[in-house]
View 1 (spheres, one colour):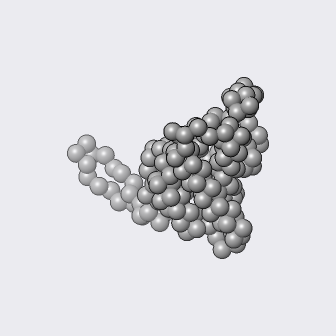
View 2 (cartoon, helix red, strand yellow):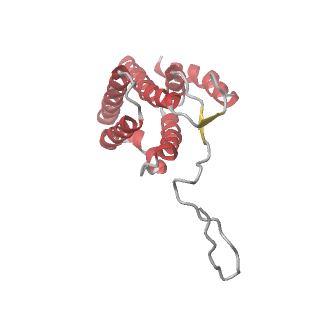
View 3 (cartoon, one colour):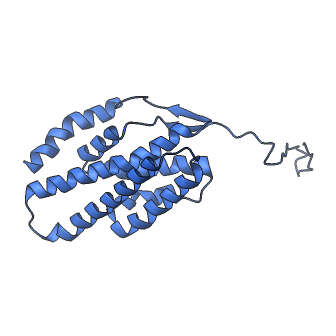
Length: 194
């Protein structure tokens, strides 16, 4: 359907109904193995989670047209109360988007990952003023990284289901910058806990 509208400059405009407009391909990063995201979380002291959440929520917003504000997700990893609501909303959005063939195992892993992430954030918040053994801090930090990997698992499982996504970037593993971060920061993080 084409309508001609008189504009002040005598221009014409092609106006189509939303059902006739063809959406462009959505660009998203390749789905990764959860281990890769968990390792980047570990190597960056959790700072990678802010970047990751911003990018994934932005992709989900483009796919679903949901009312997410990606820039707010940068702050989610640092506040347990915010995490509770944010991860619940993300889970609901993913449930609405996923098809019925999505295994309940994927959802259970996500729920456990969210619970672990919230609890480890609470632990670090509560014990920030106390002296706790380094081995305990290390164990909780590993649990936080594993929990983050579980959250990434569900988001990446969903991205594999979606049709019409143009995947960009490196298909497997790390890109060169991520390799530098992993190779430099892994010994640094391990040394801090030793």
